[in-house]
Image (cartoon, rainbow, N blue to C red; front, side, top):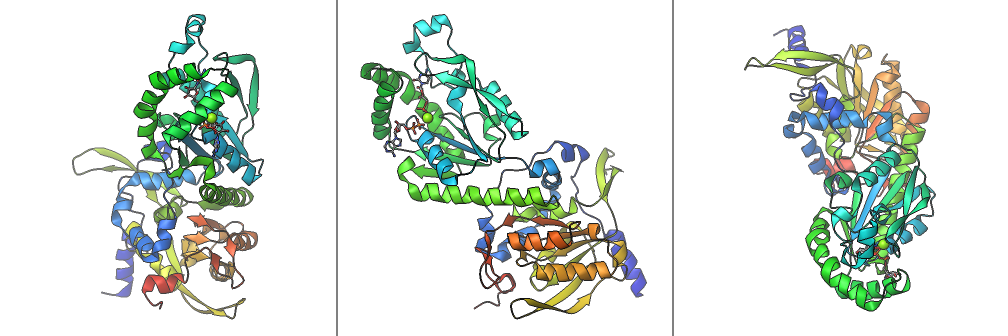
Amino acid sequence: MPEKAVDDVMEAAVGAHFSGLRLEALRLSSPSSPSSPSSARASPAAAAAAHSNGAVYANGTAAAAAVELASPTAARQPFVIGVSGGTASGKTTVCDMIIQQLHDHRVVLVNQDSFYRGLTAEESARAQDYNFDHPDAFDTEQLLECMGQLKRAQPVNVPIYDFKKHRRCSESFRKVNASDVIILEGILVFHDQRVRNLMDMKIFVDTDADIRLARRIRRDTVERGRDISSVLDQYGRFVKPAFDDFVLPSKKYADVIIPRGGDNHVAVDLIVEHIRTKLGQHDLCKIYPNVHVVQSTFQVVEHGLGHLPFTEKQVITPTGSVYMGVDFCKKLCGVSIVRSGESMENALRACCKGIKIGKILIHRVGDNGQQLVYHKLPMDIAERHVLLMDPVLGTGNSANQAIDLLIRKGVPEDRIIFLNLISAPEGIQCVCKRFPLVKIVTSEIDYGLNEEFRVIPGLGEYGDRYFGTDN
Ligand SMILES: Nc1ncnc2c1ncn2[C@@H]1O[C@H](COP(=O)(O)OP(=O)(O)O)[C@@H](O)[C@H]1O
Ligand SMILES: Nc1ccn([C@@H]2O[C@H](COP(=O)(O)O)[C@@H](O)[C@H]2O)c(=O)n1
Ligand SMILES: [Mg+2]
């Protein structure tokens, strides 16, 4: 078959294969909850293999989620941490420790206690019979409203609850400003699915029941105007049964369980570090609107495709039903930076059958010199959108060399989408400063580079690990 004909056949097959991607899904789906990026660290091969797993791409909602994440507002959503646990487990103490250690004004605390319903006069008269540990004791609709406002970056007035009078202070509120990190704390914050869905990270403070009871007696007698006998009575009738029925079953939703609460300094340090990383990512996304952090490594390629222009397309299925889908621009190609970029090619091919893939080889000379030694690109690359692939963005020098070459070949800067799995802030800054119109899609922004210009913590020599040529 003459070469032209092969080309035509391949070209006809090119196009993103989102078999289930509906426009409704594009509009309605929400980003899935974050999966641990560290799983990718264990094995780059596993991460890339999962990339090439067709099952991911057969599900249009994954791609739709990626498309939604691409919107500038989605990129700036605050990071919400839920902290739950039994009464007196140390939730408030742990939250205070986190906030103190962070020493960052971009973190705010919202207590579920603030949303206790006020008691009626009748209920107040018999407060000892009221179950404050049942989910119905809270005005969850109001909590959702407040959290929604904070997520939309609007300040809110949070009620102030008086544990002695069992009601809210009617005339005063606590003003909570919109922030990058919101911590929501309370015994039942994991109970309602709508509240759970707001959270990017869930922490359960797990403290021995005897210790909790001892602390509760001390706290409630000292701070909440109770006597020992009323605390013990309430504990036996309501607090313990509700813990067993509602609080403990919600522990399964936690991403992190902290045994011993505030005594566990290691756990608190780890959480603080994690939040710092998230705040760092937030900063970079704010400064460079073309940087997109996708929550899972497996969706980087799909997310990149979500940046391509598309048109609405109606098809008739074999059963005669009308199906509204999307048709991506035909003129696209992949370019991998040899050698580790090749590990992402299978994922791209799984999404776009028959896609043309070019290669760029950049040789590193010493620590700061980069030499472009080889390239083979589609002849008509100037007319295409380019998905440039390299799993690790370190200094940004190779990426800049590759982007520079593409631009010299006639590819407009804003048609280049750079896909990678792990990036260093230095690399992002280097690329974004020189090529502000290039979109970067990454799944994790790490702490930075070490003195050997390696990403920290990173994952070592990606190419060697993926292709099995490491020692
Ligand atoms: N690690 C700890 N050691 C000693 N006392 C603690 C510790 N953590 C909390 N407390 C005390 O126990 C009581 C309950 O703690 P708190 O953080 O308010 O728990 P929660 O918010 O889960 O009800 C408070 O009086 C607090 O000072
Ligand atoms: N008027 C009220 C309201 C709540 N409680 C108890 O507070 C506990 C929740 O607060 P924590 O700081 O301990 O998480 C809950 O167990 C209620 O029993 C109350 O006693 N009086
Ligand atoms: Mg508390």
